[in-house]
Image (cartoon, rainbow, N blue to C red; front, side, top):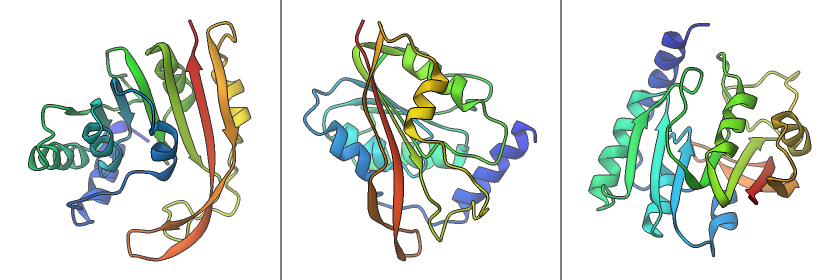
Length: 208
């Protein structure tokens, strides 16, 4: 699968949905970041932009990236419409080919799953190395499939947060795992349906 097809796939997915005027942030972001001092954040796979806008409203300067040009353009427009254009830099990146430059106090990767070629381990390792000392990497993965998910393969296996952490192979002298668990919540899909889902949550802090 080539990356041109991947970009077209995600462009088509977002273009088929109406743009949300007030996209919701992810629940695991709000529970993790509330109380942290604002700084520089990187949102990997920004999608509808709910996380980036939520962070920007709380004083964070956010670099938000996605492979979909449609998603990136919509977020840039939303940020300006909400008076947050100076706090959100929405840029297109294909993480299969490049990683956004910079150093950050927070890097978020929510549901960075794709049917296309992507070395997630390499991306998450790059994300950890992009942290300033004291900065955190928040990785939230699916632990189950919601009824509205594009991936309904019953044979899909969801690696645990501990497995994801082990795969990144970060030196314990420099990075510490602060959280690795699998909480459940009631999620609402794009069409308004609700379902109980499991999240796999991994929080890593750069200590040095």
